[in-house]
Length: 196
Image (cartoon, rainbow, N blue to C red; front, side, top):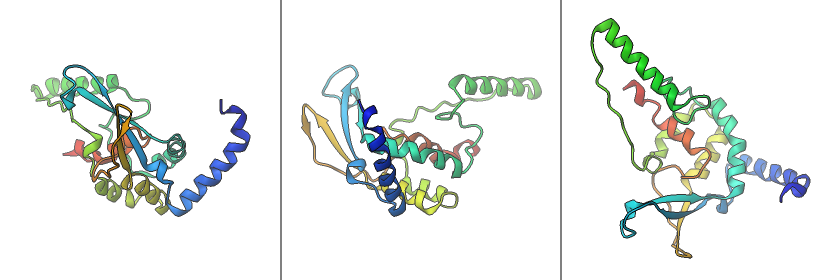
């Protein structure tokens, strides 16, 4: 559908993206997310039975796709123990590493490790963005850090339910559900965890 528009649209988008980069500022519509609660199972009166799906601007997603390579290139190296949200890594890779570590401990030290598995609820909602910005400050160029702060610190959320839209609110913590950059920003947030 957009293919015939590409020759006209791409130069305009590139110009807009350059202006956003230069000013570390994005359009308000890129910073608004509509959250649609999708019922999973059980009683519809229990909010725990709904999964929030966040809908964001297509132009925001395109812009984030353009930012992502620079973010990866300039960011601090993630701990080798981190496997989630990383290219060419899967659950099976992490599982194989765990089996190998347990095997080495058993063989070399005749001991069985104690394992703890965490299932962190509302993962993205709990991220302290100021900590993430502090971790990235010495690595990212000022323009990239500024644009990330604009995209995430000035988000407005509205709930879409039964064809009605709530008043907008601004979350104090968290990274935006539905953002292409959120998984990596979460990885930065927990990067020190494996060394604890």
